[in-house]
Length: 422
Image (cartoon, rainbow, N blue to C red; front, side):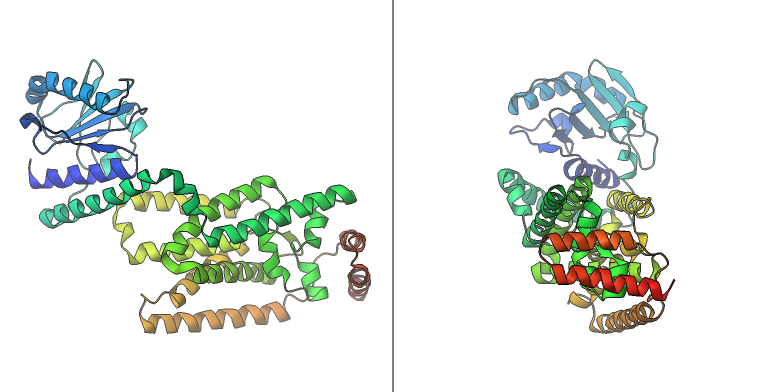
């Protein structure tokens, strides 16, 4: 097989193994008809076996009995029934596309067209292979990468029962426990006191601009990150936190990860405080966007974006998150503030970046904090709308749980503030 086609084979092999979950199959007695070819299996998929080679149509016709025999042997090796189809991929420019029995033969080249039945299963298959300037160097690099990743994947598969346990890093478990406990307390309290969950959430620390402005309860800029009202919101944030926290702790460690999470939550709510109206905000989103920014820098530094598949999936993820930020009742300003803070902190805390860059970013972070602090103190001291009824209902929650002085202060201070500005 030509050198550039060997590179294509390895690129495709990497994609099928590490993106689509296929396993590479090796035979104890290699068949000389399939020298340099690859065989992969993923039971239960439409194409449960894939053969990658460079055969012409005549070679395919000649070797079809052997292909069927190997297909059967593979299923015997994994104790699986032949419930899918075999996909035979050739890089030979003279090969054609056709189907015989349960074998789909296709020809593949960079950016070439895919048949509909293959594109439905592997829509990006023609984009994961591409030409490079130095095929020999790329071949060596890919062989090493696949070997290392395969070993890592084997270790992961052998410890599959511990995967969930491994994901339970402290950067996830501590915030998750806080979120779940506060969520349960809000709903239990609201049920017992026959009050709304929103008012109860404010009592338990949700961001509410009126209380920050009038009562100087700046602690809400942090506490609101661990407050959730909807079960779907809670589960969605915890699922995202589990995936991101695991990656964060691998690259930054526990202490730095928690710092990035906390500061991103605070910064996100500060931006909302400066630019947003008088409203209630809850959730970890600011911190999650901070994690997303920090991991983006890791991916940039490690060259992950050179891989077109990774690049495309990352763009899709960022597009979805951008669309979510502009949905109704979602604070895009909190997301933006958290993302900026997470990116700045990631550079400041990551010793792999140059000292000069970290100093410059630290200065930018300081200037940003001063600017937000200034505008927060001067331009955001006045509320656009008043919700005295809400304030009284929150005060009633505090009164019923025994915080009578705080309840009275809320009623008195908010009333005086509104009267002065009416």
